[in-house]
Image (spheres, protein in one colour):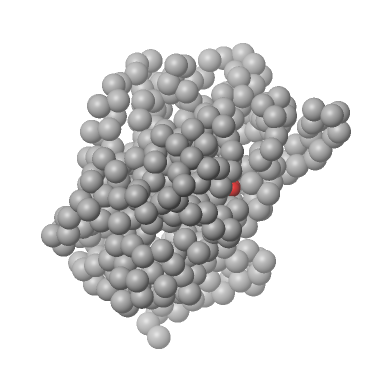
Amino acid sequence: MSEMKKYVEDVLAGIKKRDPQEKEFLNTVTEVLEKVVPVLEEHPEYKKAKILERMVEPERVVSFRVPWQDDKGEIHINRGFRVQMSSAIGPYKGGLRFHPSVSLDILKFLAFEQVYKNALTGLPIGGGKGGSDFDPHGKSDNEVMHFCQSFMTELYRHIGPSVDVPAGDIGVGGREIGYLFGQYKRLRDSYDAGVLTGKRVDYWGSLARTEATGYGLLYFVKNMLDEKGIDLKGKTVVVSGAGNVATYAIEKAIELGAKPVTCSDSSGYVYDPEGIDLALLKDIKEVRRARISEYVKARPQAEYHEGCKGVWTVKCDIALPCATQGEIDLASAKALVANGVQAVGEGANMPSTLEAIAYFQEQGVLFAPAKAANAGGVAVSALEMAQNAEHLQWSFEEVDEKLKGIMGRIYKNAKENAVKYATPDDLVAGANIAAFVRVADIMLAHGLV
Ligand code: NDP
Ligand code: 2IT
């Protein structure tokens, strides 16, 4: 075994030994480190400076109690976290997730991913992630507000426009960002607009931020298909999720002439052979905050199936997982390949297991990895920070054009590094290497910190 392969294995073994319960974190670190062996060989200075050991240890982790009272007067205690993984390139930047599955393990995985995703955008942002095991499903606006206020009452001391800038993720959208911002502003007595991104556009939010992750995913996938001479027009697309990322991936897919036929939530999935009715989807999820099963009441030709895994058995040309981590396992990958899938674009963070990714790549499926393909959201968050700093708001078209340019550059960068260090279509290696080198070089420039 080469010296650098051994170095990577030792670092991974160290994580396993220290934090054996952190399986998701170990998965994502494994994906990155195993791919960067060729650049470690080219740059022995990284090992000498113990860059890997530093990268896998968060700069800071904050964990706190979040007490709140529901509408009936009952008291609940949730857990809040912020993982500040790396400030090498800029203030910590990354979303907040409110979901019962949130744990330190999940947030360390997401924060680690975020560092390299953010590096790929080319914008001045470090990486972090936070959230709570609070479940917003079925809560009233008043309960969500009280929870957000309590959460921010601790978080505010750890964030700021040049310190750490949270945004949304699963369970955190414009409504939650509004309540969080209101409480931050009250506690600090200062209108620091750039402390959070994903704000509503009527008070310092960026146009096209809501659309950015889904649109960016389609821009990335289009770059990948164009290079192979494959036309997105007329392609059947299977999408999972029915939240922010899925909705705007569906919107852009339709705009580009493709036909998305599914969407899902954690209860089940919808298959609409005539193509998803976007207005209906938005009405159910954004206006009514209802379950996706409602869809078939208005579209009798559509089918609703309990359980979300079945979505990957629907025949398609392109699969876009946009719900959550680990949703495509090896069995689902095999079902997709057996049905002739040509490309997979990850809108969610780490939606494919490592085995599923390996299978797609072995079978010659074009694969767009999450940290490159879903970077459009955080990229427009960084543009929101820029607009906030100059007290201006850019037009939708201006932000969308910039987003298109950024996604094109991320694709080109990942592709060039795949060609140079791996195999030409291995965008997983290409993206990881491009991001890793940027972070590592800046860490070296900052000395031992
Ligand atoms: P939303 O909360 O808006 O939507 C999440 C969707 O996924 C919902 O339909 C939800 O269903 C479903 N879902 C969530 N958890 C599970 C689960 N455990 N099993 C099955 N379905 C589930 O979140 P987003 O759209 O913002 O986020 C989706 C993914 O995209 C996440 O992986 C997130 O990290 C990633 N991402 C988000 C970005 C953003 O800007 N928002 C940027 C980049 C990546 P239900 O309502 O039933 O819970
Ligand atoms: O996973 C992600 O990139 C996000 N949830 C968006 C983070 C951000 O700061 O906009």
